[in-house]
Length: 453
Image 1 (tube, rainbow, N blue to C red):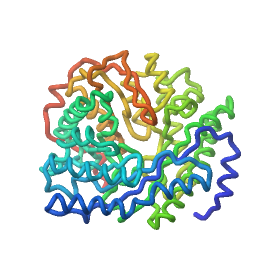
Image 2: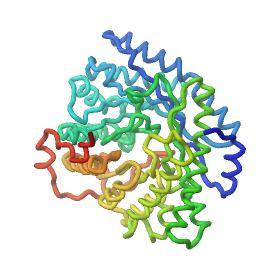
Image 3: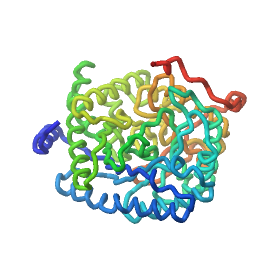
Image 4: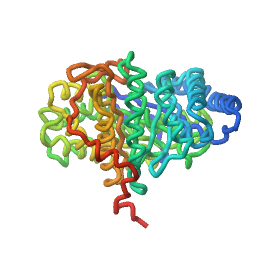
């Protein structure tokens, strides 16, 4: 779809833009040709390949920022899920790979390097289990590395053995990074129906069906949508949906142009634009505030799920009209720690874990950046993961859990990471035990929806 930036800039200037930015340009790099039986050779191949393709990634993104005057908040790299090409290694060797990846990521200057990942929705190989066992130490000893594990899919069902393992891994990660408010858990996400071209961390990875190298872009824009809704005033539901669509159309067009320019200067393919509304802790850049502007007294009021559904649907419709390359997750994110409106609602007790779960049935991903008491039993965390996975496989959508059982903290306390990760109040978890259920093990069968042939 040909277009000129002047056209996009003109349409963007039609609204009072607040906090408009491109959240991330993520370079996906395949590491499938880096495997070797010798761990030292493997590490060298990984390091050289990331530097080969990524050495100018940050510099080029910064040039595009200056040229077009639109901020790119994060410059990232996503790699092939590590357990796929390197499945012959043990946990200690995987940690060496994580350290090599971290060294390469810091060398090229990216904010995060994601793809320390495994796909185990139907079962775990010995190599995948070794990778998973290494996650807590890998996240505790690196700066840029992010990890994800896919434990369920509509086609395969839910791997309950993997659910329990990941609940234990989350607890251990929290303990190993307790001195930093259990920040390791902020870099770890458990998925159902993970997508191969997601540019957002912590869940990004470079899927096996992706090209050798690609640029995927994730837009932002909650502040722009919020301003447009406030300016629209007391209009009908249909008119409100049109306001959201028109605004999302404009920011999608700008986001895709930025992504294509970064790809062009890097000499690699452009992949997708992820049209998710991604909030930040900054005032006025909140999905929670959008929901309030739509007419709710606060996030968590009756009608919250309906308002979020309309917002998400309108964003998707606009994105599909604005671009032929929409992908990734594409919707609205509702992370607690990264969204001022969500933080305030949680502080007031208006937003519970259960209401957040209901909202995830219609939003872009799932329970994101949720802080809970460090004493939360591993079985309760497994139950939360299983609940989200069930929403994902029954509705054939991506869902995820990024939960922080903050070691040594309880309801009334906070975790505080600063920057984009923000801060979050510790939320209560029901003390009813799901232990006998989640410890049955095995695989929860795929739903009837999986029979699509």
